[in-house]
Every structure is written in C-alpha cells, then in structure tokens.
Image 1 (cartoon, rainbow, N blue to C red):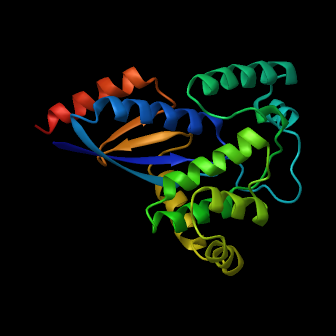
Image 2: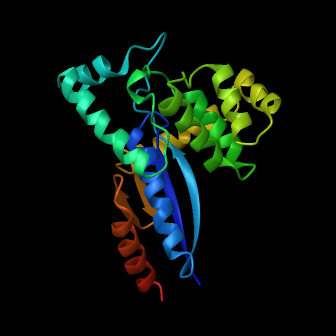
Length: 215
C-alpha cells in the first residue's frame, strides 16, 4: 500500500483550516483502501501580534480586509453552511472575538507527542467556532485538553512553564521561509503543495496522481 504523508500548516483561528481538514478527512476515508495516510500539524498565526482583549470578529475582519461588516457577515454565513454540511460546529462563528493562538499551538505540539494532535486541534476549532470561546485563555484551553481525552494538569504545566514555545516559533519560521503565507496549506510527501480548503474530490484526484508517481 502506498504511503502519503501530509504536513498541514494551519491556525486555530482560521475557519477554512477547520473546513479544509474536514474535507481532507473525507478524501482520506475514500482512499483508505488504496493509501496509508499520516498527518502532522504545523503552526501558523493569522494574528501573531495580537495582545490584550479581543474585539468582535466582524468589525475586525472588515477592517483587515477593507470590506464592510455586512459583506463579512455574508461570507461567514456561507462558511457556516459549508461547515454544517461537513458536520462541524460553527454555530457561534460570528459571535467570537479575535484572540492570540500561540498557547493553543503549544498544546497541539504537546498533544502530538501523545499521538493526539488532531483531537486537540479539533477540540480547539469547536471551542472557537462552535462556542465562541477565547482559545487564548488557560481555562478554555484546559477544557479543550479534556475534550481531546488528554490530562489537564499536565497541560497546565505546559502552559505555566512555556514549554514548546521554541518548537512553535521554529515551526512557524520554517514554513514562512518556505513561502507559505496563507492557510490552510497541505504539503504532500515533502514535495507537493496544495493550498486552500479544496473539495474532497479534488484531493482524491491529487492523491491518486501523487500516488501513481511513486509506483
């Protein structure tokens, strides 16, 4: 059976990253008889300089992209519909606030050492988009740890001691230097880049083409 390794560069605050992974899951499920997949998550911060209290997401996005709030609301509503079809909880997407995701990325690295990085990432997506929780707050992060089936007290020690901070910084720098400036980005077998939240059918076709080259 051919093996395909996927490095996923993403941010917890990126709705298309959640959608992109859900679509990837569908593609991997469809190709399970043909390929053995492995996945590794890598950090990217959409708002690396964010400090202090967050602000409501719609005006923040309108200012960032030079659009009106009504346009951003329509865009978010469209994403909510896509997410619902994929079984994702984006119920509170328009009620969330901007926040820093650095500590969340540290916990994804910690969870990776226990083979639970995907569960941790999905718990964070649900907290932010489904419940509009501030995924920069320690107690919110610890609830996500518990939801992922991991040990909260060990995670608390990670948050309090700054563990994995260097790992996250190195991760971010590596992919920025590789030219990745938007997410989600999927690097396949260290050779091919698939950008954006592609439809499952497109991913299936791409993986078959890549798999065919290695035969």
